[in-house]
Image 1 (cartoon, rainbow, N blue to C red):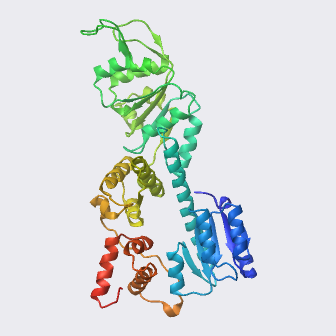
Image 2 (image 1 turned 60 degrees about the vertical axis):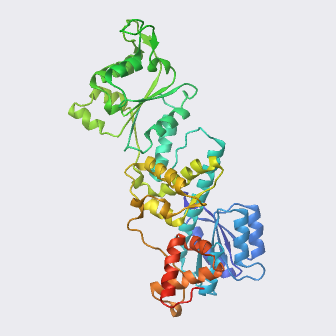
Image 3 (image 1 turned 90 degrees about the vertical axis):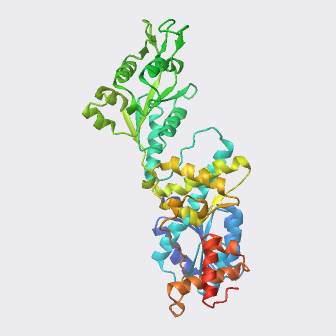
Length: 460
C-alpha cells in the first residue's frame, strides 16, 4: 500500500477555519493536501490534477458536496469521497451514500475518526487502481507472466526477484503447494538476460528414475534396445536458457548425484556416450518440502542442497496475505471472463467470504474457485451462492455504520432496519440495486424484508 506522503487529498470547505484546521491535521499525518474554498474551485482542481481522495463539505454556496462528488467520480471513477456536514440527518446520510459517498461524517469532525476513514478510503482507491492496471495488463499483455500482490511480504519478494533475476546464480524457491513457485521461476526467467532463450520446467515427481535419466541427458545411437538414433536431452536442448526443477525433493538420490555434477562441471554425458558436452544453463529449483531438514537427515543430498540454495526465495501462503485476495479475485475474474466478452465482478459479500477462507491450496485453489463460480454465474456479479459451500460457513450479516446524533440512536436491529428501508426507498424499491449498495446479496435482502413484513412493518 502507498505511503501517506504519496496520497493526495482534495479538501473542500467554504468555512475557512475548518479548512485550515483539517488541512493542517492531515498534513501532520503525512498526507499531501490541496484545498478549495468552494465547489467551483474544487471542480477546477479536479480537472487539472490527480487526487486519491476528496473530503468535501455538503452544504456550500455555489456547488454542493454531492455535485463535487459526482464530478470527481466522472473524472476519476476509482476515487472515493467523504461527505462532511453540520446538517446531520439520517436521510442526508442515506442519500449521500446511495449516490456513491464512501462515508458520511457529521460536524464537529473527530480528527482521529477522520484519519481512520481516510486510511480506509485511500486503501480502497489504491486497490481499485491496481485492479484497473491488472485488467489493462491482461488486455495488452496476454501470455506475459502476471505476478500479483501488494502485501509487504510480496512487495519484498518482487524486489528480490527483480534483483536476483539479473544474477546468474542458482535459486531455491520454497513454499506450500499452490503458492506460485513456478510463476516466480517464470518471472525470474522473463526478467533475466536469458529471456530470449528457452524456459524449461521439469517435474521431478512425474518421471521414473530411468525415464528422467534418458529425458534429461539424452542418449547415443544404440545406447539400449530400440535406441535407433541419437537423441538430445532436455538439458542440452535448453542450452543458454533457464531450467526449473519443480518438486526437486522428489528426485531420486542417484539422480541427485548426476545433477550435482552438472552444476559443478557445466557438462553432460548422454546415456551410452563418452563425450562430455558443455552446456550453459541457469538452474532454478522449487519445493514444498523442508530440504534443509531432509539434507540433515540424509534423505536429500546435503552438497546438492547447498549448491541449489545459493539464494532462497520463500512464498508466504495466501492465508498470511489476505489483503492480496481482492487483487487476485479481480485478476482471475478478468482472466476468465474477458476473453468471453464479459465483465463480471464479485459482490461485496462474496468477496468478504473469499477473504475469510484459509485456502489450503493457496492461490491455485482460489483460481479454481473463481473459474468454477464464473461457470455458475449467469449475471454480472459473483454472489455468495455461486461459491463452494465451505466458504459459506460462519458468515454473518454486516451493516455499514451511520453517524447519528445521540437523540436518534437506536438499538442495532432497529438501526439496521431503518438503514435498509431508507436505502430501498432511495432507489425506488429496486431490490437489486439496494442489495448492491448495502453490500449483501438479493436473497439475504429478501429474507430481511420478509421478516419485517411478518412483524407488521411496511416495507413498500
